[in-house]
Length: 238
Image (tube, rainbow, N blue to C red):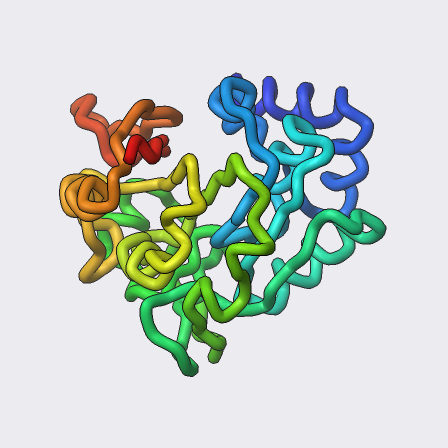
């Protein structure tokens, strides 16, 4: 409760964050700690939802180009309102995957917990209110279908928040890995969405492309104190 109150105070204490909140998007201020340590000219925001992360990125990098991807129609609509007039932010209304075509996304009662993977019982147990309320047909594409090398002004940060679908996003983005300095991704230690890849598998995959874990943030824990999921920063050291 105190954590939520502190976030409320910080959000409404910033004019741009306050305006976004009134439009339905609460800035992801929990990401500012890591963002402030980086230098970025391009942000690839996969799983943008209503623009929570993009708002924090815009505050930390006022002149950066932001490319955001959000397949769900309702949060994408809010995102568009929040960033109306920001010519350096572009929203793509589809999901990033290693496959192209159409798929059904499982919509959570809390929209930012929606996933292309079925929502598991553990997810709703650990994060109450994230149960499935419906599905929506969406489009999937590879990252290179939307962006090219010429679009990416280094240093480039790719952020991923896709509720268990991280490995598919990464596999669909390998053609542009050489342009990326950082990958900042939420990963889980336990299965919350059915069939998801866990942190060790994702870390091993990224290591093959020269990315090494250099930070861990915003960890959630279960009642016994064991870590459930975190936001991980990987840096391209190749």
